[in-house]
Image (cartoon, rainbow, N blue to C red; front, top):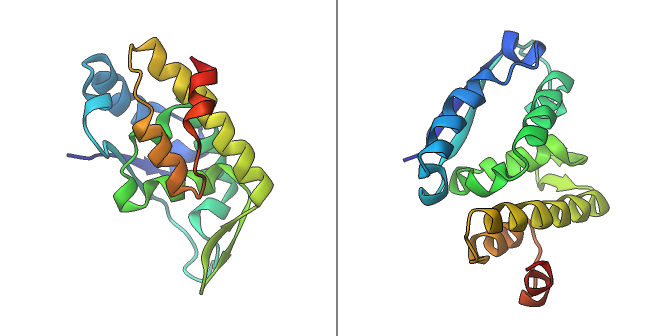
Length: 158
């Protein structure tokens, strides 16, 4: 079952990672974070002007909080609730993009490619450090972002 990390205005403004730490650290310590599919979701509870047309990923204070979180847990995309759209939303926090009402999120292609490759390198290494050799979930994650990575790349990383 997915766990939710709830963020408030004050936590975003202070770059306070406590809401994430209190959810991630215990589940990471007991090993459940890696075994439960779609383990994490975010609920961003901030006050905004109702006429502000920007998406949450376009708000600097929200993006900056997610950048800090990604620095702390660069493997986090692997354990998000993908079916609930968390992978796309998380990626939008870190990758330049435009939002279209008809097409949805349109990532900058070069920036997305760099993001995907960085995540492959970081996550493959993180999984290996934990004795996990399967790259199936990592490959599925990259496919969800539009990339089909060949096994040869993962063999190079071993």
